[in-house]
Amino acid sequence: MLSIIRRTAVALGISSLLLIISNTAFSETHVEGSKAMKELIPKLEKLYLHFHQYPELSFHENKTSQIISQQLKTLGFDVTDHYGGYGVVGLYKNGKGPTVMIRTDMDALPVTEETGLSYASKVTSKNSQGETIGVMHACGHDLHMTSFIGTATMLMNKKDQWHGTLIMIAQPAEEYGAGAKAMLDAGLYKDFPVPDHIIGLHDHAGLPAGKVAIAPNYIMANVDSVDITVKGISGHGAYPNKTIDPIVIASRIVLALQTIVSREISPLDPSLITVGVINGGTKRNIIGNKVLLQLTVRSYNPKVRKKLLSSIKRTAKYIAKSAGVNDKLLPDVKVYKDESGDAVFNDPKQTAKVKSFITAAIGKDNVVHAEQSMVGEDVSQYALTKEKIPLTFFWLGAVNPKTYAESIKNGTELPTLHSSKFAPDYPLAIKTGVKAMTASAIGLFNDH
Ligand SMILES: [Zn+2]
Ligand SMILES: [Zn+2]
Image (cartoon, rainbow, N blue to C red):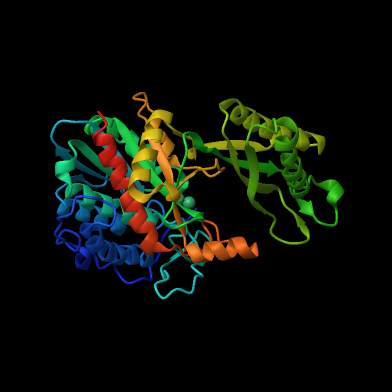
C-alpha cells in the first residue's frame, strides 16, 4: 500500500489547459477524418502529454479529476465533483431519448518510467517503507482520459445527431478495484439518471494503434485479492527443532497452491493463482514467527471462483497442520472484498451493435475479435447492480504499428501494461479512441 508523503513534481498547470478544447470550431458532420477531428487532435495530444507527465496514484487523483471536471464544465456539462472520492460525473440532457453512460478511469501506478521519452513522468512518491518510487501511467489511463474528453467534445459538437441524456463519469482507484464501487455506493444510480447503456474502453499493449478489439460475453476475469498470514514459533536458526519455521511452511504453501489450478480445476475453465508477495524474517540466523503471502486469484466461472478460494484455505490450513502447528497458530486467510472484482461481461446484443458502429467509423480491417484475458477491470461493477444495465467494454490498440510488426517478425515480446517501458503510440490511439467511442455513443442514442 502506498501513501504519498511528498510530491516532487511541479504543481499542475491546470489553468493553461482550460478552454483549449472548447475554442475549436466544428462544422463537419462525419466522424471519420472530419475537419473537427483534425482540429481537435493536436489539443488532445497536448492534454495527453500533461496527464502523462503528472500522474497520480489511486485514491490521490486530485489534480487529474480537477482537469476532467473543468474540461467537462467548459463543454457545457452539469458537473458533480468529489463523487465517491475523486470521482467526477458530467451530465448533459439533450432532449428526449435514451441515457448513455461513458466511463473512464484516472489513476496511475507506482512504477518508475523507463521509456526514455522526453515527456516521461518524473513524478515520485514514497512508499510505506519510506523509499522513493516513481509514478507512471503504465496502464494507459491517460489515454482513456484523453479519449474521454475528445469524445465529450465531439458529442457536444454533434448535438444535432443525437438525443437523450449523456452521462460521462471519471472514476478513481481502478487499480485497487475500488473506484467503481465507491461511485455506486455514493448513489450514482439514485443521484443521476439510470443509464440504458454503458460503454468504456481500455488500451491494449498487444494490439496495434488504429485498431479496436471487441467481443460479446465474458472478456475479463473475476479478481480476488487474498492474504495468507502463515504463523510459526520463533527461535534461533541453529535450533530449528525448537521452533516451527513459518518460512518453510509458507514455501510449501506457495508450491502446493500451484497444483490447485492444474489438478483441481477443469482445464477448460480459465483460472490462475499468482503469489505476488512473500514477506517474512528479519535476520539470517533467526527463525521468525510470521510470513505474509499476497495472492491474486482469477477466474471466470462463479463456481470455479468459489472452489479456488476454498481450496486455498484448505491447502494453507492442512500444510500448516502437517508441520505441527496447533489450532491457535493456523494461517489466517483473508479475502479482501474491497480489492476484488467481478468478471466483465459484454452484453451480446448491445456489443454486436457497438461493434457495427465502430466498424462503420474506423473500417472493417481495424476491428478485431477480442480474446478473453485474465486481467480484471472494475467497470464490471456498473453492470452488476439490480438495474442490470448492459455494458460494452472494448480494447483500444496502443502499440505503434511498426513496432508491432517488428515484434511479430522478430518474435520479441512487447512491454505489457504495467511495464515501466510501456510507451503507447498516443496520437493514433487517441484518434481511434475518440472515433470509436463517439460513434458508439451516437449509434446507441439513435438505436431506440
Ligand atoms: Zn492496470
Ligand atoms: Zn487499467
